[in-house]
Length: 79
Image 1: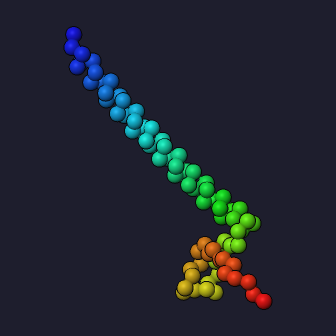
Image 2: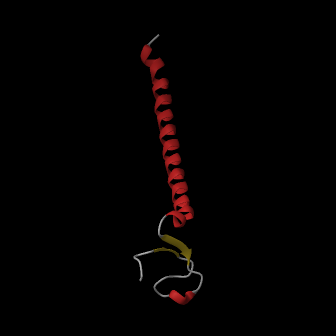
């Protein structure tokens, strides 16, 4: 009985297991980033000086297209 024959399948399983963990970790990171972005847009205007809104009409075209998401900041104070 050779030890090399027994170790080859175990090494293949180990590599695929690492790939699965890497895929799972990258998927969780992507979902976490997406959730953080949505929370920033949803809660941000209440905590920070910006507003996010969609352009619903063509009044700002051709610079801003209908359906675009616009983030407006509160640049400075007016007297």
